[in-house]
Amino acid sequence: MPKRSTIIKLCALICLVLFMAVISASAGEKEQSARYSSHGISFNYDNRLKIKEKEEKGTITITLEGYEDLLLMIQVMDIPLLSGEDYAEALVKGMRDGMSSSGSTVTKLEKTSRNIADKKRKGYTFDYTLAGLTFRYAAYGYNSSGKKIAVPIQYPVKNEEKVQPLIETVIKSLKYED
Image (cartoon, rainbow, N blue to C red; front, side):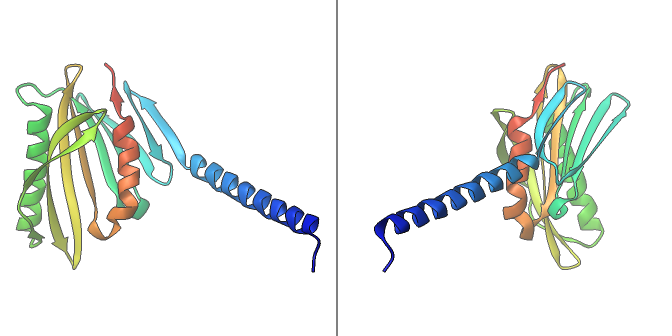
């Protein structure tokens, strides 16, 4: 039977190895985090997402996509006579009508809300099924610094558990300063 001191040393070694493994895993998670900051827009995002930006006619669109088929956009625009929430509703209704006319099965449009940039924002959502795969499409909108902000989001419902943390990382850290 091993000595008590040998058992204690072995337990200490096992604890040290486990601690190093946890530290290493945490470092790997942090390496997946990136920060976007341009055009007065800033947010954190998972670098497994591909990011593109486009500026056109007073509208800035930042697109994050690719991982688990997530598509998340942030649009900053100057649209007179239309609130950010109205724009989000128009986006969702247009997408729903388009999917319906293409033969997709669509669900009823629902009002939703989500915490974006530290405030509860109103939005709209629906699901559609195309070629046997069900997608969720939602858009949220609000006004900030005289601009309209829209956040359309689309992903396969089957990937919801995997994409929600990525979505939360972006929308909780989203800031716009003109």
